[in-house]
Image (cartoon, rainbow, N blue to C red; front, side, top):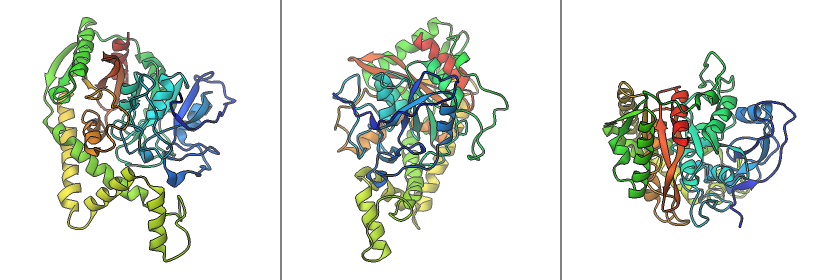
Length: 423
């Protein structure tokens, strides 16, 4: 049975000889590929073919990788299950009655099923780490600014990052080596000053590593997930690491703050999809407002419409200070809590997702359940920090992911710690 991991299956071979030669890669369908359809999982862009490659696509081609298709995703990256795609849901290769996570579910499913050696995803509030955890693979959300976003169809600019998904920590780190680095097309990128070598950090040496476990990230998680998480922490201890519990009270406000900010940015970013500049035409009868409304009614799915409406409301006159400004205050509080925690520890650890993979259809009628499932991942995007999800056992035969969070631009430490869990 098909997993529906791809929206478009098409092979683009590279003529270059590089570090990814011989590797196949799936590209999330919100990352521009020249001459290859890029739909964002939406009927709005069903026939859109970009005239240029995203910077990360240029870099994987230059490194010799073969693109094998565009991976399925929640529409415009809005979802936690890859069920909001206009092209149908992706199934989890571990259990085809369950979701693969989202919004990069097609990317993770393709890697987990062996349909691609590597994949590119994007992470706005956990969209790389969630499917990595649900499918039993590795996913890295880089520090904001480490990887160019040029060519990524925007959802929420201040939160999102492109990152790698792979079967192993070393493979994910090697892909990060290829895509990381400054880009003249993206003014938010960071110049490291030297070539990165993240793959060499996957040496499993955690002797003396100080791990902080935020109690708020563990409370309320599924019992089987908690058990697998503590087993992984004990394994790290056995390899020479030490852990301490820390408190980060701000994370209780993080989900609410994240969704106000993300939806507000989305309502602005998606205004361009009006049937004139981009997207389905609403026809030429009636006035422009009527055509604009028809284009968006026909082109967008229910979850995208919901988020646009909520974001527009939060930014509207009389409500900006009540919602958006308070969400930005909460974001600053989250950053402050992380800064304080990293004064005493090297990395922070938590379950990636508080629950095992949902059954298909389980969360569609309850959006709030889907939003709350992001409780352990969204704080990292609010603080613009790096994080990795690595397989850490199972509960009832379903994968459990361990999330490791580091200070800004300290991808090496979380990669090292994750490789110790893997070994």
